[in-house]
Length: 223
Image (cartoon, rainbow, N blue to C red):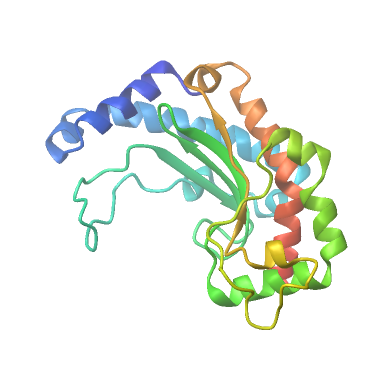
């Protein structure tokens, strides 16, 4: 489970984002990432109970967790480390094109959610086609009371087009969603909530609520 030491390490890393400090505090990092690994492992077990694709895949928690090292080759920001832990659980794997569930842990900015963030053009085209041709089904998914109770902001876009995408027009009943460049949900947690004993249970509840949307998107991509 996540402990105060986990959050304290990440806060200290943000204030001392350099290689010398990180190496001097490697033991603290190992303990913190161990806490996160345990949380992800428990969450995977929970997701497998309601998502058959994850149950069949049985992913290794380690394969779902992003590296803490930043790629600074093309960035003006040369700080070497990310200041939060991130995990992505998907039928297609962490680097695959499919929708999934994600967890970001960072002091004051932790969140969980599910969906498809900034997909490649061919993948986005497939999701738009499915939303257009199965709009009644999509509408039922994104207006489900359980989803909206868990994620009050509903489904949000990872970018939008100003004009209708090619092949669609403003008269299309689904045009609001067809302009999206991605589809995801997000639920933030305070540090107190992160440290609570029921944190992993609440994460699982969030993933369960967004599972129908994840399943719809993946069916669209794989069809």
